[in-house]
Amino acid sequence: MGHYRARGRESAGNLRVEDVIDANVLRRLAEVIDSRKHGDPGNSYVASLFAKGHDAVLKKIGEEAAETLLAAKDGDKLHIVRETADLWFHCLVMLAWHGLGPDDVLAELRRREGISGINEKSSRPE
Image (cartoon, rainbow, N blue to C red; front, side, top):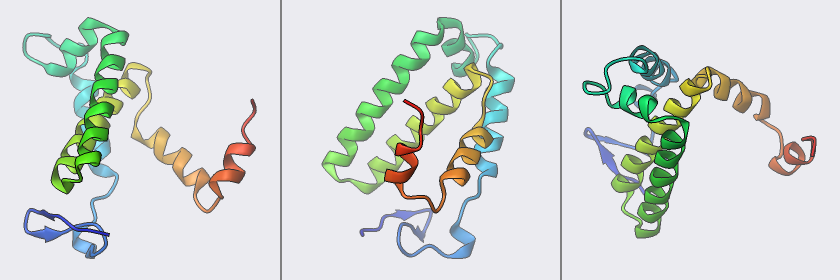
């Protein structure tokens, strides 16, 4: 697995304890999104997305997902990380639209932890 340098630290396979960013970053970002979603669309990107409606939020996720895929295809690790950050941000906006947050997703990931992906998927109702 390759590595990229971010803020002078190695990432990917050589993480040090002080380099691990916890879920509080996602929680703080979700709080900012929540505080801005009903703000002035002229002063807030989040408010402008909310003002445009649900389809605009979903379209932005599609755009960011496509950009993430293209970055991955190119293989530039820093570009992959930056596009993934954009995608995650817009997913947080979508979660906020639905009254959800990162803790809801983290709870689902915790539920799945240690379960084979094949077994987890087969346990879902159709």
